[in-house]
Length: 355
Length: 199
Image 1 (cartoon, rainbow over the protein chains, first blue to last red):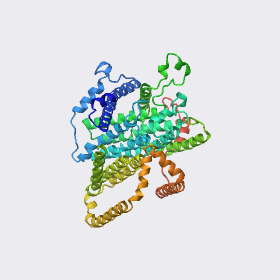
Image 2 (cartoon, chains in turn purple, yellow):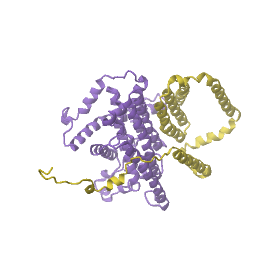
Image 3 (cartoon, one colour):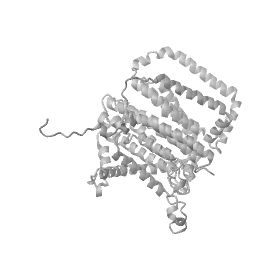
Image 4 (cartoon, rainbow over the protein chains, first blue to last red):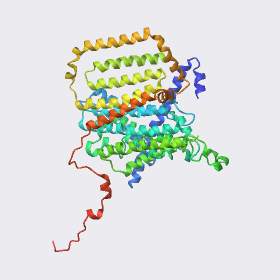
């Protein structure tokens, strides 16, 4: 692909060809993500439907598969209402402030051994920085709406995201210690060699903490205090209609997918196969099952997305003080403790790093 | 060519954002300009291949500090007029201080420019060695004592600020989860068999 581009645009400087190539990759990933979100919404509504013993959407298209597309078109055509006393600039900017970091974080996600947009040295730090960015979209949306409900929602969301970021960061410290690198590709490479050498076994508490704080970070059930319908209508995006609301929605789902893909990469071996390291499969005709590929990453990601939806259908919402005490008094101590345990394991040469 | 375009774009955004911090009437706008300034500074550091410093700047200042700043500004709901009243009084002092800082930087750059030759070698060596790794090894071997002292001071600051703001109030009804879980349903519900006609 890139050779084709290089030969076609050979009159240009190599720098510019790299730029065009990156833009092309970015466009592909973005379009795929948006399509994923469209079908994720359908998937969510179907799964929750069956969990609630109803059918879910079944009118638009075969088995209702086009429901999300119909909804998207409806949202795009709706009138954008800007409240009279709202701060117009930030009201219009804040959905983008949430969407842009959500999309930009995908730049360092290694989809397969070959395909990664930017394999930067400090990939893990970059992800932490970018996920902490999204909070501005939420705060400014609440403030710019000039509505008490929206403001309360954004305050809740911001405090929650700041609190859970710490637990998340500590969980990532554990991964960094085990992987010995900040590069996501190298972290996956460090987990090669079958299910038992993935990080979820030695880092099990961190794996759980990371996923829980991921749910809290994306403001999903059971931590969606930011939009608690019963108390504050719909939280920070209560004043948004049409495309503004659609962008918030899109950003939330892209963040969900990001947390799922990262959990798979950091703790479940990313593109590594479930069957890698099983010798009789490798020698017989099923060796394609043991090869690392994008398929395995997508499968793991899909599983975590399903867990997101599953939790949404199963759990009641947390109360705000319970949420805060879970974050500060349970998750953070667990991560600190496990980093200590990991240090001991490292010194004693137990675990994946016993080289 | 591309590098120059990127540099000058970010540098001009940085200058505009920094001006925005002091010139905007609305404090929320000022705070957001400051965030933009931090981000563009991070970008400029990235151009110098100091990716660790750049990302940590964004992570700490944008990800944590400025969130709390915005929180406070929004909660206090500062009136714009009051905020602006002292501007003309402070302006001469601020301009003077700014000039002093600029003079210092220029002096440092022109008079002692040979001192910076060492810095260049660090940024060049980071091409082969991971920048983060390099910083980590330096901090934990050569500068371990000062690093530990800095860490200790920060820990002290955390403990002091918590102990200053911690108030234990009496007679507050609090939820104790373990008691709730340990509650015996048999003691909570009494089954009464009411006979007909006996009231």
